[in-house]
Amino acid sequence: MASLALVGAPSSIGIRPYDDGTARGLDQAPNALRALGIVRRLGAIDSGDVLPPAYRDFTRQGKRPRNEDAVASYSRALAEAIAAASAHSFVVTLGGDCSIVLGCLMGVKRNGHSRIGLVYLDAHGDFATPEISRTGSAASMCLALAVGRGDTPLAHLDGAEPLVKPEDVVVIGRRDDADAPFYGQDELTASGMLDLSLNPVRARGVAAIAGAAMERLESNRVDGFWIHVDADVLDPGVMPAVDSPEPGGLGLAELAAILTPLVRHRLALGIELTIYDPVLDPDRTSAEALAGLLERTLAHRESQ
Image (tube, rainbow, N blue to C red; front, top):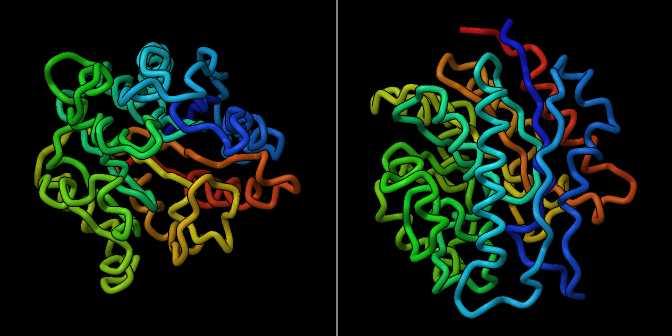
């Protein structure tokens, strides 16, 4: 059985503040899950947290991403921790906002993986650019940044080449078509990604979705892939503690059915969980749902 290494990414710097102007509480998420015994339940090695810089851009500066320099430096620091953890283990990263995907991808690439894939489970496409994003949050554009899209240094964190090629990305479960101008959905559709939005997922059956994702990545001959899970891919009825809930999401059993074969695939390098906000979850019902999901899909992960 492959070992699991847990890395905390307690960062809110990539997302807009609450409506009252204070920074969101996503930085509390890793410890909220630890308090529920997630390390023991997964049988994981706890590699600790990578602490972010302070939140500064409470008011957005022009058309630049909020906390642009801080997100860049944090991505590099997180990449170092992910590289160390992924050298011998499957990595479980507890975020934090969606922009942590940049550091996670940078980290796994440092271990000799020349071409990696990305399975992106999210209610939103996160394909905005700084020019069209309504919020200026790096989290609203992090998938675009990962494939090198956008006039910002965050789109070129690892040099001239993007962190991942568009054709090596599989997007699963988004349901933000009504917000297309603000999430870059027209461009996402034309990008060459495999876009399995929620209606096709349900039409094909969730059991077939992981197979479609793995078929795409295997046919492209990636030498590893990373899994991004935004908690808002779940229905707000079971996961209300997120910043931008969208109705009609996946149930816990549906998400587990998609994730289980993905995390057990021989090319799977790690998984990140993002956007869970303990401030919106005072009784920790949402935290327990997520801890149970991780335990169900990861505790018995076997090496392939």
